[in-house]
Length: 366
Ligand code: PLP
Ligand code: COI
Image (cartoon, rainbow, N blue to C red):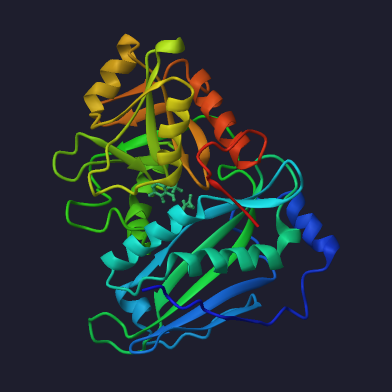
């Protein structure tokens, strides 16, 4: 059975940000600080399904103090980017993959699943309306943040019977204020992000709330980011706060890229998945398997592990330059961005910005 197409009502803003002010925002977008003139909202009600789809002016919500999300955190989100292409048009990167992950997150949190085509249409509509907010240059982009939360009012612990799906957009420069400089990481043995059977695979706010105290601990050790280990043995590398991790083994044409396997406790990143294909297309070996902290430390010392980098929609590819942990500190390679790290970064961005062919059909043109 095909889902009936949802009709969107259109209410354009009567007070968009004046062009001069928008240009000032686009000149130094930062990350997640300013939002475009519009948002898309769609409601879901038990027994009625998805309804009241709207493109409307960006505006605050009024929230009842007994809103169920505020108490029990039934909320999920996504992150994807729209890039200005070499020919001036605009395209989003793998929106279908985000739509599918959003459905998986919804299932884990007992929330209704938004049809894939409605997710993509909602993103398209917002980007088309606020296309002037898509930065014009290089890796800068318009970051889209689709999310959904329970809107029912009440304190009973059960799945809500009303939800709101929303897409907002924010022009994005580098996620890390220092740009592509290598980050330092702290291996957290005290705190864990997700345990088997938990919500680690879902993109839900609770996972990020759980990360903050560990992130503060990392900062206390002078590190930029926390690296999560598995909850059971506290030995295997999982991921970072908002990024997956990659290890480069060996160098030159024989280099292989290895990323922690998806054990159910880490987020199945779309950048991670894309890089498995890009690295293979470039002729490098790829592997998904568990990597222990001992393997990292020893491989770093004996030169088996030559580069390490983090990847994600917001962070793109960010080199890891140094590690601190209860079991010792080390510099990754020579502490500088690795050669293959930067090659993969360039290749990924070339596809995303339309400078290179798109053999996997990842770009969704508007
Ligand atoms: N891991 C976590 C915890 C994240 O929040 C993200 C960001 O979305 C990622 C990994 C990378 O996922 P993606 O490449 O789909 O952005
Ligand atoms: C993303 O890369 O889209 C993320 O969600 C990471 C972070 C901003 C939470």
